[in-house]
Length: 189
Image (cartoon, rainbow, N blue to C red; front, side, top):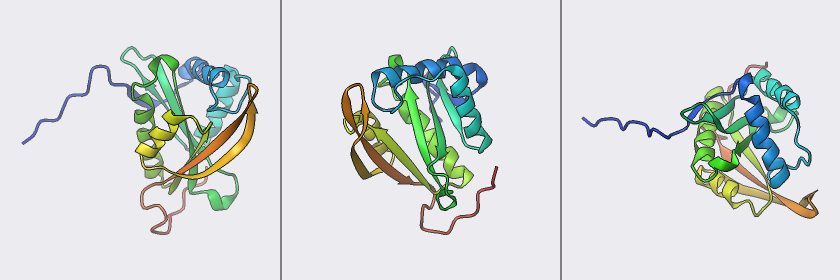
């Protein structure tokens, strides 16, 4: 009989986001808007706007997760949103993941994406799309590749931010049986 390994003391805890997490979420996202190309927004939205967006995600029954350290500090967050609004896309979702700059390269994105994949699979979604800003974003591209995503498209020079053209890489991963079987309907929210 083998003993289960105890979780690492510094391992992040992934949980559902709460209203109290919104200032930290806004700070993390604001950093990425201002200093990166993963988001095509150019002005960071405020806490109220991010709260509105989060409510829309949760109202659809989709996960909006955070990774917290032992003291409860938010290290990163991830959520799933509908890929497109037309009904034929109803089994496909898009992931979004943002990690606090001080928590980069510590595996936070991986634990968030793994949890997001598991939750979306359990709900009944069949495909997950990653829309990655900047074809030079090797961290996000590598993370998605390591968790079973394959590159499906490159949209060259589709965005313009901070005086440069930005590509968009699209990656896709099946969830559960993917397209091998017909899906059961996901309840409408």
